[in-house]
Picture 1 (cartoon, protein in one colour):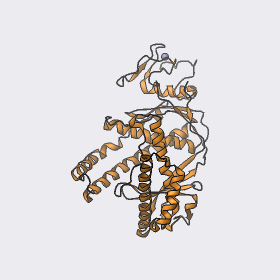
Picture 2 (cartoon, helix red, strand yellow):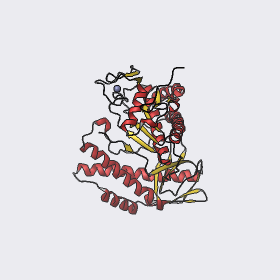
Picture 3 (tube, protein in one colour):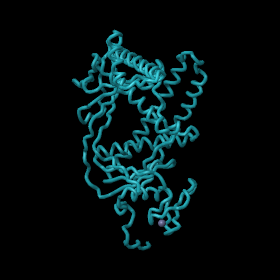
Picture 4 (tube, helix red, strand yellow):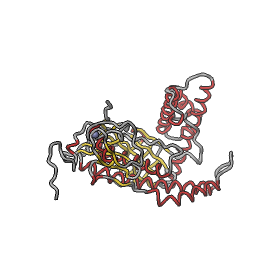
Length: 400
Ligand SMILES: [Zn+2]
């Protein structure tokens, strides 16, 4: 028996805002990032050397390396120590994860790679500051090292943040992302539950027709644009060992801009849907979908996967925010089980088969609606709390 995971408990959540940075501040952030990038590459080189010599390069050794590097390299010591220490920690974590994956013999495509060098024009700046490394004063973000940034407060920060990440995206915009403890904003009880199945044609098929979410196809209009940028990049692609041309970097930037816009639209659609689903239901059972991102999958499949991913994340976040129970159900066999009697068909239904017909009890229902109900049952929720489904024993409605 698979136990669904409840993700309604308190935790942490990120709040992200655009930053307005003066040219001085931008230059200072860039300099901080150059130092961190240098340090990261130094970590890569040292840990490779240690590995070649049959030694381990653990956290203590990395910490020592930072202390030494800061005392012998004045340029490094000019920068704040907070993001540098955080970077050393991140490096250690990232390498430990890669080593664990090798040890567990995960298949290659699921393994986290060993941390790689960060190249000047490719790696996007990211700086992490723990509590002692930043301060909010008069609505502005003060970073250790003397950088002051104006935050565009698009929504209120609900609690005091424990850390902040300052980063630049592929388009060149700067953002800050605060980690804050979740503050639950309870909603009135509804007595209703919802089962959700993810799909390609319809992002979410639910046990309530009013809450189905058609695939928004955000990428479709931008598809032509993306294809054009891809061709431009291919044409301007730098030869091996050569630095990328300005034209290449520009095309790359436009492409990133288009992708970022699609991602924003997906997130927006996901959040609006999640708000409605969470407002109207006390508990929601949802397929714990994990995209495979296989190289061979079609563009439509990739777009659908991305939409599902964004919607699922929005639902979990919204559930947490409002203290609702979101239960993640393991996806195995959900298309094979009958929601009425629980019988399992011998073979998975082919995708072309849109109707589920149970050979055991004779129940007939649209395939995705059946799966959505299976989610509820697997999560241990009572389907009687579903709209439009008669509790057992209820009379059939009289023919009109
Ligand atoms: Zn059945």
